[in-house]
Amino acid sequence: TSVTGVQTCALPILTDFVATAKNGQIKFSGTITNGLERPILVPRIKILVIREDRKIILEKTLVLDQKIIKPKSMIKFQNGLSFKSNNENVSVKATLLKEIIDF
Image 1: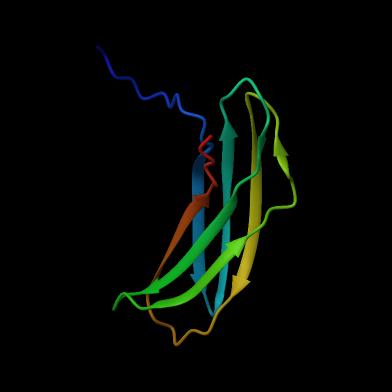
Image 2: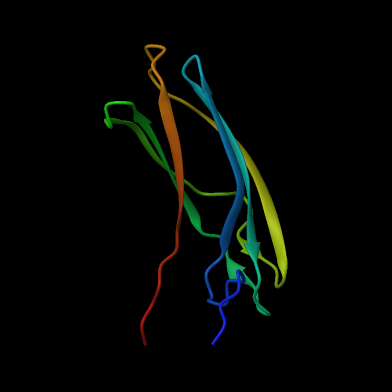
C-alpha cells in the first residue's frame, strides 16, 4: 500500500489561508477546494484570535456568500473583522466546520 498527498475523502480543503492582524483589524483570505465529482455546500469557517498567553480574544464563525462549490473547482474568499487590541502579538487560526451525517 502506498500513501500519496492527495485527499480522497469527501471533505473540502482550505488552502492558501493568510491572516494579518494590525490595529484591531484582521484581514484574511483563502481558498476552499472541492475535489469531488459532485457539488458540495460551502462550509462555515471558524476564526480564532489567540494572544500569546493562549487567551482567546475573538471567536467568530463566518458564513461565506457563495453557498455551493461546483465539482472539481474552488472558491476564494476575503474578509475582515475588528477586535479589541492592546498592540499585543496574536495568532489567527481558521477551521472549516462541516457537519457530517451518519445514516
